[in-house]
Image 1: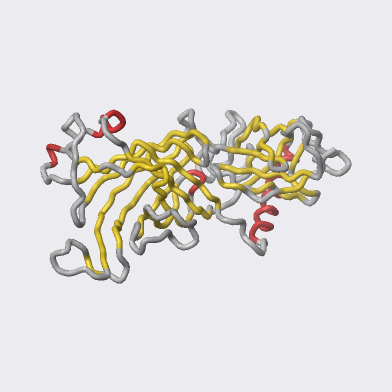
Image 2 (image 1 turned 90 degrees about the horizontal axis):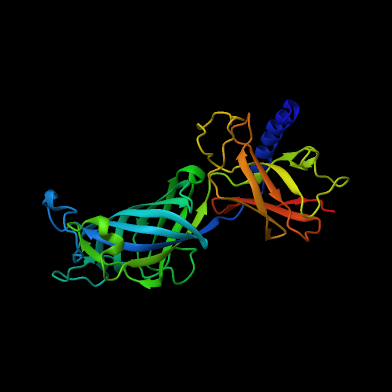
Length: 340
């Protein structure tokens, strides 16, 4: 890539950032749906630390008032895409009732229902094991009150809470979430003495549930805007324009911002050109709502928050075409490009 084009990309990225800040309306929150499977709650039912994780068979435990337990699940799907990952939680459970009386085993409160205070981390990786990032969740009340968090759809009542940041593309994220038991299996309670290595093969029923995250990222994916329009180029780096429109089936190059962390690059440092740094992603591109083949998605060398995404325009695409980039299931603003 020549230096003049690189300088143009950096300047255009600054322009794009100022344009995003000027939007009268922010993009809507991203909806991320996560399936958690092979779940077990390990109740701290003994004070003898030497017994933790020593029993190589399935155990049972009760969850008494104000019990503490550790929650472990596998992540199997995100927005229907097969992934790898783990959900870890540290929980404090309790029960509340508006009509509680001494000896009932429930606490007195205006809102009734089972509840918990918990911290949960969902760590997500792509199916090939490449780390995407972590999302930090806080449980606030769970099913107390009997309904979902405000703004979440009916039926999400298994638990709910807040999103407090994360890592990778989820740095600075905020929002709310709800857990839906629609997958149909309640989480079993085991003793903390059970060896967690047998979790997937312990026998009996394992729990599963569906998390719905209403996530507001720190930054949305965005195509860089130049003085001549979107920074979308043909393979020879000539701009896609009304006089030289894109053609269905060709591979285009787009400069974008807000695509998050890259593999092996230090935060705040310019991306190198040898080796190129892939975006932890996953990165997807749609054209007129149709998925395209992403050929390349890397940090643009010489910049620290501009990215190069090469993609193939789907066959049959007619213009003008709406181009949208997503990273880690977070969609960006759509951009219109001319098509032949």
